[in-house]
Image (cartoon, rainbow, N blue to C red; front, side):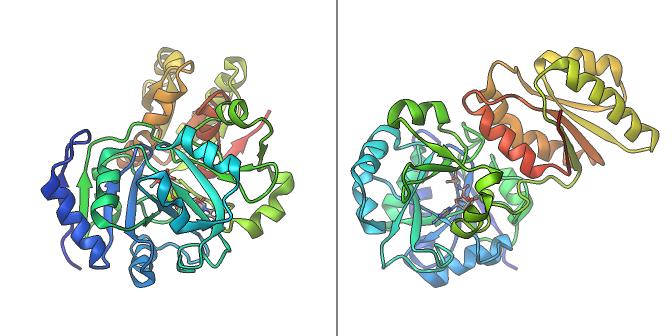
Length: 352
Ligand code: TXA
Ligand code: MG
């Protein structure tokens, strides 16, 4: 296929020429990869079903997985959704621009391939000047999933996008590393109380402080969920290597787990990687000098871990490890989103 062009762009002061070039592609019905504060998105004109189809083709994404519609200002919600309740306006005013996606009743003008045939639509205002400038210059709403191959690890840099989509898309706007590092929180506002379908950059604590009661999707109500949000239960965010997750934040639990499982894999002649907290780094290096260790941050700073999570998984894959081990990082703030992604990415979850 054609060559993929990468244009560097200042994250805080995007060059108008770069934005114009990308917007011209969106207007012409093409797809463009661009940075948001969470992960890179692969965008197309949300009102052009043929353009939206190109997103699914480039990613290899099945049609039953709906996309998020990105707008540049809260005033444009009414172009995308109808019957917007009062609490949604309050939420949007408080959390936008930011990593919160609201599921609302769909406006009839939104093509059905955007919403995978659902009568609801997911919408957010991203907190990134490149994304906002691109949406404005394109004079439309932009439908965009994460800019990775379907079911793989989401991209937090232009290089990640290129590694997955080289030759499959015409342009990547390179605004450097994203800041949040995990995707937006998806909140279904069409039911009462509102329900978190996917934890993300805005924490459950923040939402509860603001709104009061909020439900969270769990396995127990998973059947209803599968109908309302297809795609959510699929295996996702997976590196090539097999990820083993020890679902504990207690060193007395996960260290013996590492000792047993890592040794087992080494005995089998496997190349082993570990995604480590700062607190475990020295211990791990002493125990396993022959293992690839990437430290993602302190267990007390989940924002830092979220920021490095996907690049660590991609880096371990590029070092060609056969398996990756990780502990859990708890559920405070963005740590809940980290746990969600690790569970979905895992080949095996070891529970205690
Ligand atoms: O941070 C993010 O949200 C990034 C950036 C690019 O904005 N986007 C992203 O998109 O993560 P994607 O396609 O990888 O994830 C979208 C999620 C999916 O889990 C999908 O099921 C859910 O949003 N979703 C989209 N429309 C929905 C709807 N109408 N009802 C329920 N869930 C929906
Ligand atoms: Mg995705």
